[in-house]
Image 1 (tube, rainbow, N blue to C red):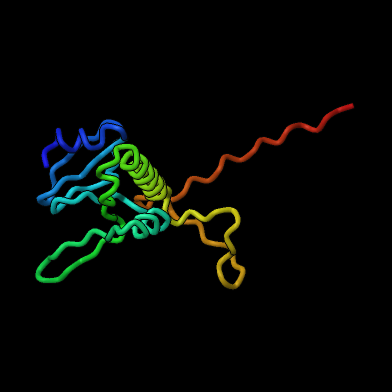
Image 2: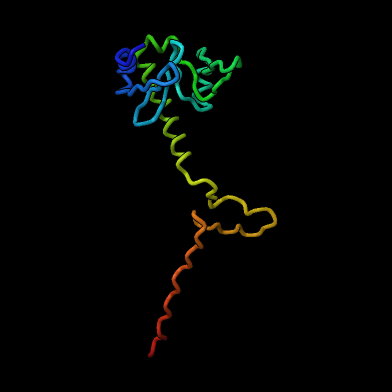
Length: 153
C-alpha cells in the first residue's frame, strides 16, 4: 500500500506521516508512532484496555518470523476488518492508539528511579542514599542561610 492510500484510509483521523521500515511502514501522528503496516495489515499501538477491545473484535497481536521463530508483539493489534470499511470507526480506534502512544511516551520521559511521595521507605526504615549527579561530580551543598539580626525593641 502506498502513502497516498494510507493517508486516504486515515483521512477521518487526520494527517498521518508514513515512514517505511522493515518491509512495512510506521504510521505517525504528533511525532509518535501509533500504528504500523506490515504484511498487508494495519496494527494499532495498544495498552491492555485497547488490546482487550480489539481482541473482542477478532483482532490478533502483531507477529513476525525471525530465524524460523515466530515472535509476537502484544503492543500492536490488528485493525478489525469492519473498521477498515468504516472511516469513523477507524478514526476512533486510531485516536485511542495515539492516546496509548502519548501515554507510553510520557512514561518513558519520566526520570527513572524517581520515587513518588507515597512510596514506602526502603527495607529497614533507613532513608535512601542520595546519588551523585551524572558525571561523578560531587553534589553541590545548598547555600547557608544568613541569620538575621535579632529584633531590637
